[in-house]
Length: 246
Length: 258
Image (cartoon, rainbow over all chains, first blue to last red; front, top):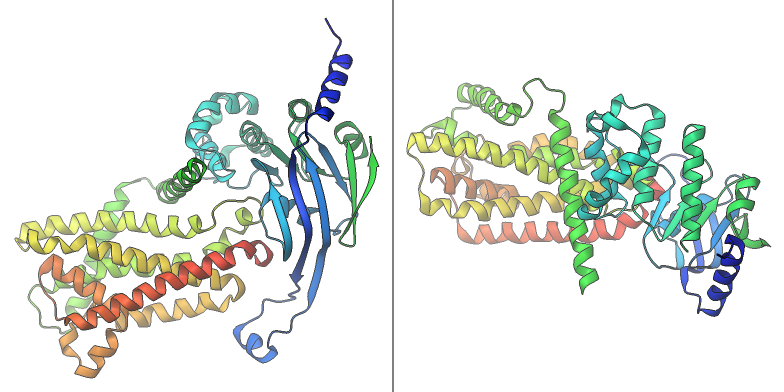
């Protein structure tokens, strides 16, 4: 029997020999936002013409992330981390430049997005699964796993407004994980609920890494960064630089 | 090709799930539950029917039937439009957090209202059978009218919803225009009450032709000329295409504006 360490070394060398396929390719991407202190009205629009104050969140960024890589993104608040994650996950489009994404992206930016408080747990699993891009049959196949991992028990038939905050988080995370994404996007201000679930979630994310899935992770948590990420990039004033590689 | 089909499959599944959510969530806490799908249009019919019976002196046989055949499509159209216009902003929580086909927000509202419209229409057909007013031949036009009003409502809703993201004035505008529009459409009166010129102007309003078509297929009453119909179809088509095009163009950047 070979030990885990040797196994992973062999695996790593195999990976290097194989042609690395890119999971995320970003070419010269810029994102400018129109600054609006207040929403422009028709009249303002007519009188002020096309002049508007602009704010550049990302400036000419290029980045290639290969399949199986775990990449950390750090930077001060407001530096453009979330904008970059949003562009990768397709929530918003860049002002210029190109983005190529290979495979299913699931972003854990907000675990509760798409939940409806009036609907019961089961209905919400289907709705949420469809929102993140799963097909009905897929959700049906994973349904038991989702419920089990979330640990919501008989609440599955209760409307979501009866759930505790932790239960909602667990359900959201569970759906996202069992969507079997190729690329997982984790945002900094994510919380996993209680300690037990936190550990299980981290276990899941690590499993993800072992299964050669791609992870993009924005965080301030150095411990997690060291544990999860091979490469770390710094975003500052809309520019990207590589700062560390393990 | 296969991946294209798969993408489509997910789109439909998603749209239907959103529509089901829209319908289910509406009746979740009501004691009478889904009975309201029938009760709501019935009560509306009675109330509006009584009011207009006494206040509008229009000389048609069976004013109630005349009114409802126009009112039902109008309710579908106006409800959908007023609910869809601010919908993108109401769903900002979803827009900012997930990637999904944005048009499903609008189309699911239109579809759920369409579902209610069909239920009410079914009730109305029963009443018509009782009155012996129904003709199967004329009824063949009904699906055409249904598709037409469905497309027009979707197109216009996509347009106003997308515009409202950047210009919140649009919502106020729609709120103000819809009641006016009601009176600019021959719902409570007949077209031939109006002078010739005004009749022709009203035909630029695509809802006029649709309601005339509904009326003709349901109760066999209509005052129409064919060429004006074509103008209406043309206007509807332009509105629909414009709505789709504009929504497609704008929806990539909704996240920046909500």
